[in-house]
Length: 276
Image 1 (cartoon, rainbow, N blue to C red):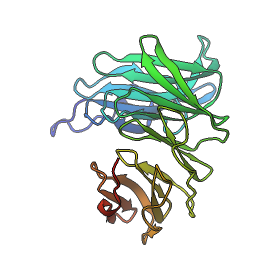
Image 2 (image 1 turned 45 degrees about the horizontal axis):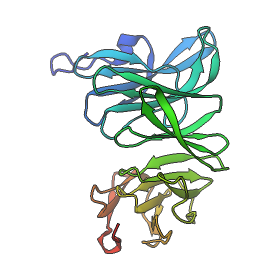
Image 3 (image 1 turned 30 degrees about the vertical axis):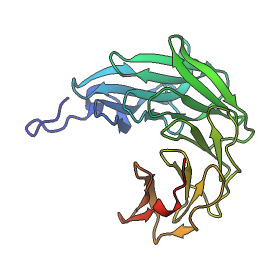
């Protein structure tokens, strides 16, 4: 399973005998994660497989997977985060678990198990911290060590979380909840500022790399706030189309969105940057 101009492409699904429904590639290009669906007596069972690009071989089964996002590579490409139901030997579900595969050498699996249902998860750029939301609204901060994934702290929250994202410097954790944006300081587990409430339906949240700016994106509108003061640094910005994705530039000096029409809009943020 290696692409060459002569050999063409051999789908992984053809090798596994399973249906491939989604795939992700690590940022360093070394690994591919394939989400699969296999038919069983109970219906379609969702799972996943981790493949080495260089060797063209499957190196790990990811177990049963659910949730959004179902899998996520850390930004450095050295960790893979998944979550799903725990299974006993008789394949009966027994609780839920967050799984992190360390991929530096041979994959090392670290697991955190809980009886609570897990909603959303996020992982820092270097894989050193994981956030997992529970259905009661609380957010668990997990750290990998020799024992597995261990609970480092709990951020208390009483409303279900729709999305989680870390800033690149790991200082800030942002969550979507009922159309609002909440910003926590990771070191204290406390809110860093007021709750932000866009005047449009929230679809995407993006944090600047240094965690000082947060962008709320709707179908065709966006606004950017300062995470420390909670004050908007831009007016409500609108675009003539549906926004597909958005991102801050690596130095946070610009913010860009791409529309479903493949048009890109970009704004210069240098006039609004404040000292960190």
